[in-house]
Image 1 (tube, rainbow, N blue to C red):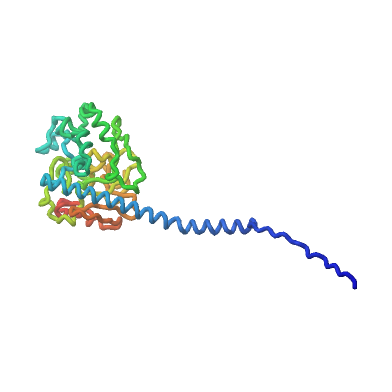
Image 2: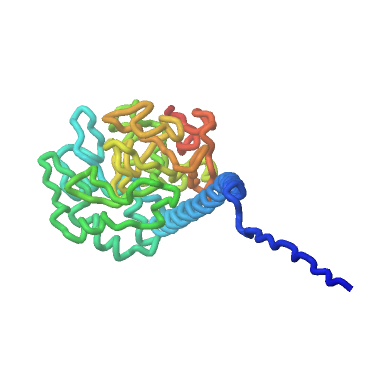
Length: 318
């Protein structure tokens, strides 16, 4: 019987890896998925930052409440006055002021003890030699105090919104280097288009120069009145958002003359300052009200309504 020898079947070797085309397809799919996912991730992150920002404002609101409970009045927007021309005489703030009387410290300095920052408040000791009291002869007495110069440089997370992309330090007022803030007190609706002494001392908001409002002064009701709102860091030198310094239409004392989120330097301005509130959140900004609640105000709010929320008596001066 003949032997039948079968030919062995040829063995083929298949590469188990990806071909170049398959690899490019996979990379393209991953890229598409990342492109779809990234906006969602950014939205979630911004939502978390906004919640943190709301919590900061609530803490500030509680500090203001505790300050009012202890002193039976709100802190002034700016503790002292400044030198003003005789043609703009104001009864409680005249020319020839002492450094203490020209105290430029903001209301945020006043509430430091209520934010468990008593040591910082002591270091700044604003009633002793003043703070930010820039003299006409450029003699800044308080600058002779190292602890005051160091104190204004302290960055406080409660005064900083995580959405803010600006610098936490400012050199606008060189030689002073000072920490910045994402928030400002509401001075009212009378801003850059008014006489400067009106904006400072006679404004219709909860916080002005020197004077201290009481709860009974807020006749619109606490739930209808802004106390504090967000601000954005400008690119120009018209303002620096320094938390320890209050100056009309700038830093941590703002008005609603310009619409919410009017960019720095735009709109109605005086000396490059527009005094506007603004935020890094898309579509609007967060505000603390007199009753302690925090609300997001839309950019689309009617200007008249927006201004009325910034006044203590229905914007009757507007």
